[in-house]
Length: 524
Image (cartoon, rainbow, N blue to C red):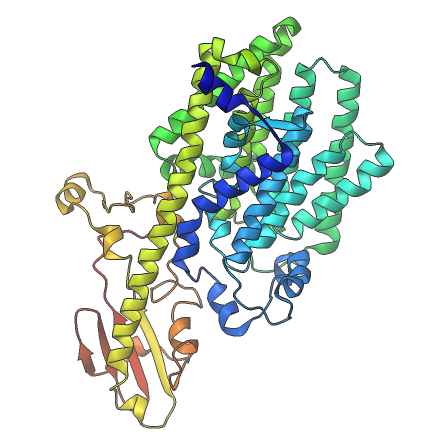
């Protein structure tokens, strides 16, 4: 037992802790790198090399992209871009943790508690992007760097903190909730270390002023209003802020319950409870405050785990990549258990031992999920390419495409998910009214996290511009889009019909009807 204790509590310097955490992140994402999945608008950037982040209010991303790619024409440099994102997250996690704990060393257990920062299931939605991911990592890094200057004099702290938060907001807005979480953790740990209350109030005021100044400056001077729901602010005039944010938080909670397996939720809730009990015990000399402060900390940090979207957005974004603040929240809870002021004797307390075990299991779950998700993307990519090749094999013999004219092509239907992801028991799904499918399991009202993470925009019936993008711009065919014409309304004769697709057409038009045997895996 003493050897296990020594192994997990052996102090590691910041450099060693950083290298260890980075290595864990990279190992967890090896399957994601292997998948080589063109995620979301990666499809367009690979084809045309455009930047296009200015309209999203992400000006720093637009400035840094040509520097990273050494050209204003962006090329696919993955997995280097994704590895950089992980490096930035690891650096931010280590530096901010050391600042919060007022230490230059972290134990192996502390490093394990920080795994959800970069490998939380929700942050995988950021890492999946070949082009966006490094700037999302920079956003996390600069939110974490801001906490390093909290105790500096105001003339240094204010401009540096505002600059860091502006860079964070101008690379990805979802990180705006990270700084309040870290400040809350810093103040709670400082209060447990018996720091002067007036001094802590002064630090809190500095943090609030810095954050507010950065937010006002960003909203007023940088954000460009558009159709992107990540940057909409017009909802501020719709209904009361309280009712709007309450409704959004309820929606977030429903998503968490449907996204996360019950075992993970149990471990997370167990750690939150243990965290609360430990800090009530640590603050027992403060009487009433011992119950109030840990509860206030948990409430505030959970509120900010979703950034400012619940307060600002008119049509709130619920995509996984907007919810990665939950990984920061959970890591700070885990760190509060593993690096409590009395951590060196924690194994004598069953409560902390249970919390540390739950921390290890939660972090391991993140690694397992990252590998599973990466392999799921690989299978989906393989299936998509198989279906694309089958479609091209059918199209190459079409007389219309060999006539020398440019043909109008429209795609309907969807290829669905890869069969290996949706193979399951039809009998169970019929009996329980659910669709069971290995990695993809969903009721008819909600979807699990892997399904939500896997953006089904290619060769599908989604409204995305990338639905048929690969056919138009990757396959060198004499075809074109014509949004003014709906070929489904024409009674076109059948040219080809097989298990994968039905192709209808005339001299100048081709309608491709894709077939899928999914049970019902898409969200309504």
